[in-house]
Length: 208
Image (cartoon, rainbow, N blue to C red; front, side, top):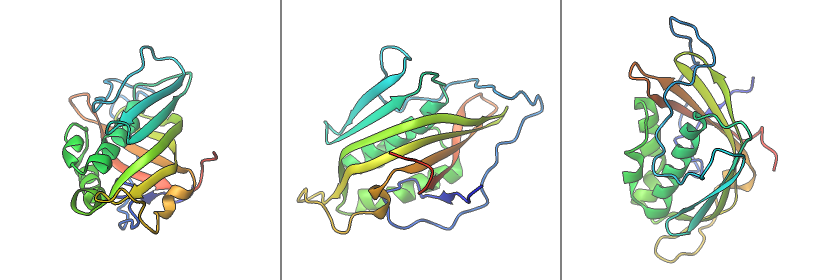
């Protein structure tokens, strides 16, 4: 398997931190594979009227950013782990306020990634706008206490802009030029809540 690169939450940030040893989901004492238990929180994301396949469109920041989520025919509640994280992080990047991260279920390592990753959007003159697409959503692994959720992200129609002028900055982050694979490693606590433990990405693995 290719080595996945840990991203400090936001993939639009140019630099990536040094990766710690990746978390591998481990079975609990019962060893019941395929358990999905408690569904994660939605972090304020819009829900379609039914869990049917199709595209869910979510507008962020009054339409400054549009996120199209292409749901598969078989929708697992665990998929909301990664879609909720993506929507919350982009709300930060549109608004400049990190308050949207507070409602996410994150473990300590992911909390550090989250706030470090959006710092340039909360402290510097940076925002995002355009259209993003999430597709290829899948729960790759589920064990009793761990899960791996993947999605492909296409941000080729998203631009990083100056908060003051609204003009696109130059150069644009290279990660936005082609679709990339986003991965969330989640852990289920004793309270039954799934929390993101680590966020990773790979530049390869996703076609348009």
